[in-house]
Structure formats: structure tokens, C-alpha cells
Image: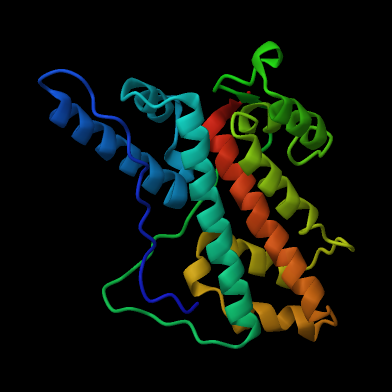
Length: 233
């Protein structure tokens, strides 16, 4: 992959806290947001109830958490799409001495997921929220997340449009695809033509291969949102 540096996530600014310890509390808030962003981006498997509660303790609202998590999820999705096209073009992976990126892992999903963040209450929902809720709950991939994502309906609408544009026309399962998806998920910085070429060598059109891999990247985005907003039972 042709990245020569790391992505820096800058947390959104928050209003100053009242009182003599406002500077110390603001620094604590910034440190907590930064730690959470780094964990959700690179080590989502370590996110637990404690990490989620700490965001509430430093004054983040449900809306704040939804927006921050959407930004982190989209950046991860975008980085993987870039990696896919660089592999398609045959760009070499560039290793940076002393710069090792840990493989990223997502919790295995085998159980029912439930939200921990409050969902949008219908009696207080805006017309836009109600419209987005009705539209995107009909999509199986977004059904569970929609009541939480609807706190920011504009971002939910954009997420849904990306979903519609990443549908794979013909599902495919093969060892080459499984290996490509696993590396793209865990170590997008190492994804290259060595993983992409076997897909086209087995007769898969390049456009279809791109679509399948892009959908796996989108699924990773949704999985991060599930880690951020709730838990499995």
C-alpha cells in the first residue's frame, strides 16, 4: 500500500468547561477522546463498556459519540478502498523502517447485537430523522444500527448510499478471496497486487473483485460502529 505516514484523527472541539479546573478537565477530555479514537481505529477488540462509559464521564453526548465513530469508521473504510485501487494498479507496498503497524482485529460476531447508546425517540424525532429511520431500517445491514445512527441523519443517509453502491452482484467464496479480505481487514498497509491478482487470475472481472473487496471494507466500518454503540448478547 502506498501510504507513507499515519492518519491523524483530530477530535472535534468542545466548549470550555466551567470552573477553576477547566483546563485540566479539557485536557482529560481530549486525552480520552484521542485514546478512544485510536482504539476504535486500530484495536476495536479492546473497546468495552468501560471505554464507552469514559466518554460519557468526560462530557460527550450521544450525538458526539455517533459523529466521532462515523468519522473513524469512514476513514478506515476509505483507507482500505485506496489500498484496493493501489493493488489494482500494481503499486508496491512501501515499508517504512521502524514504522510497524499492528494488525487490526475486530471481535468475532456470532451473537445478537444490542445498542448501549440511547436510540432516537420517535416522539422527539425530526422529520428528517423519521424519514431516514424508515428508509434505512429496511436494509438488513443497517437495521440494528439505524436507531442510533439516526441521531445524525445526514451521515446515516450518506452511509446508506455507500451501502447501496457496494452491493456485490454475485456472491463469491474462494480461498483467494478469503485471504485477500483477511489481509485487507487486518493489515491494509500490506495489501498489494499479491492479493488482488489471484482474484482476476481465477476469472473474476476486476470490477467485480473491487466491489467484493470494497464491500468487505464497508462491513468493517459497520462492525466498528457496532463496537462503538453496543455489545453482543
